[in-house]
Image (cartoon, rainbow, N blue to C red; front, side):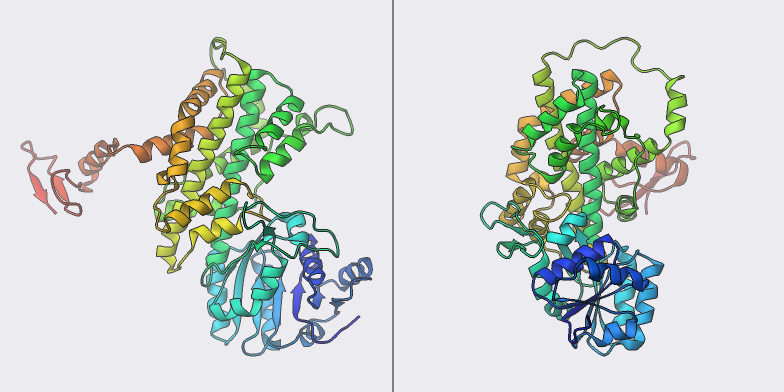
Length: 501
């Protein structure tokens, strides 16, 4: 059971850790595993008795001793205190140049501190985003490592081997992996992201975008349910159809499957028996808070987070539904049902463009804030397979940054500009229909407001800044003076003289 000189080790045998370990073993790497509860290790080894590259250990000392030097150890435990506890237990046992890899959903600021701490002890620390859920971990996730170049060189072979693969021509994920038969060809969905916390930061933004994608899909479903009165089964078939075109994606695919599913207990549509109260683990909130901290407009991600928060007050909403009314009279017929469905599809695509534009804007600002050098085209590339937001759409983003690596906003790319030009009237129609029917569509409407705000050369914040100067002497800039020149009007003086600040 205890083979010496394993090429890599993994700590934490929850579902994600188990699947990642099996993925590594399938690709021919000898791997040692350790779990705080030894019985779990034994159960895992017994379940995978025929896998030759897998070894398990009872003590952490035995586990560390089993690894070839420089040691490479993946931590797959709960983010936060549990991660720090594992690191603390490892430090006395490690030697110079050993590599510790955190594959959990850690906050990037924690990763920066951990990397600094281990670097001071001549150890490498990698904060690697891992996206794809259980299936991705088992057969190929999207991997986003943040670390030094030296650390990346040590883990590169393993990371490129176990990551998801996409076709080099189409960018589509290569499927067909099974236990013992991994996908070994294609473009790997991993790349060096940057130093210290950059990998976990990019994973956080990925999750924030994921929040937006999911909410926009849910709004599409809700609008079709209310306006066209279609049952879940028919809406599921519509999503299947959408998945054959521009909206081809993992989330659209599974949405179609979910909506066609009947509840095994009652025979009712499954979605109708699921409680409308969503949970969250924090990465969407982190994305929104960080956007606010850096002054980057990311309203669509924020609205997706708030939509989950609002859904969670289920009992309060039920009570409010008995008191608060919607549109006082039934709205006029929206017209042909198929035209409405097409309009919702177009609104979904336009909102998706704006949501991703916000995410990439956020990463663009973050690299300046934290001293990273991010390759946005490469980030889009590694999201094409393995991860939850994998979609044909990401190939278009990859191509956009190939055309212009310094692109300030996706909306300015010719392809995405063309899509907005083509679909925006349907987008506006859908937002209007949502308002008229009393259907909440926070991501559709916030994305449209973001687009209209971004394209306007004059916004009403001129009045806002005048208000700030009036009550708080916060100063203002003038349109007829160079940027960076500030002025204040003495509002208390009847003559209201202006002074330069």
